[in-house]
Amino acid sequence: MVITSTAIGFSLLSIGLALCGWRFYKAYKKSENKKVASILVLFILISSLQNGLMGIGSFFLSNNSNALLILLLISNLLLYTHAMVGIFCVYYFFFPKLNPHFSFLLVSIVGFSSMVFLIRNPQFPFLTANNYIDWNMSLYASLSVFYLLFISIGSFLYIFFSLARQSTNLELQIISYLFSLAAFGGIISSFLDIIFFYNKTNDFIPNILDIGVGIIGFIFILVILFVPFIKKRLLV
Image (cartoon, rainbow, N blue to C red; front, top):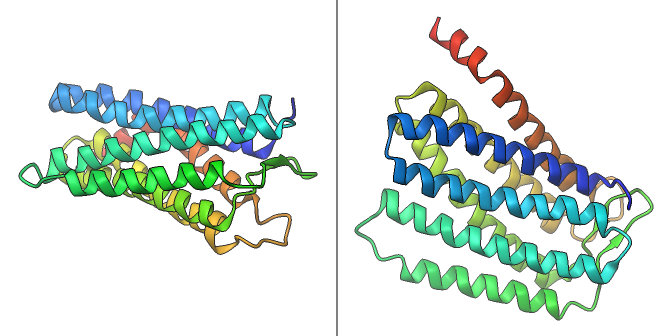
């Protein structure tokens, strides 16, 4: 077992998401629809589970390339599930009269493609000398995983930015704007790590995603701890 930056970053994000999801649920069910609150917290917790799996797996399986590949495949399935739930939420909450079948089909094609490219990838993830996990994906696998991430995190961004603008509950607004900002940061760091620096030569560059998700998770935890203080200051 090796403590990697990958394990730390994804674990922090998982914990931060879970704490924010719990706080969001408590605030939402008091002032809004309890059924909607349950769907949204499920959406948040799937993301927390997916990131937690990446974090814990990167800690316990860091020296086993075969196990890391299986971890990546399971994580990708959870990412696909999160994207599907996200698309459902977008249509259910904001476009109830539109048919979501085409969007579901598109997500399914992207999700299936990412699984195929990952399985057929001749390269295996590995632990680097600088203690981060290099997922070592082929170009096609990287592209398909990024598209799936974009749909998943993009729906997260749209949902919570829209909720933040619509809600009159200050605590919901704070957490929703935080989720929106974190989702935007997640898209940028994913793009940089998976696409822009695909052929990376600098040892620092692969840590972009690890550092990004770690910072986002840490901010989540801080905000949840200080939400009562923030509310008090904003209401003065």
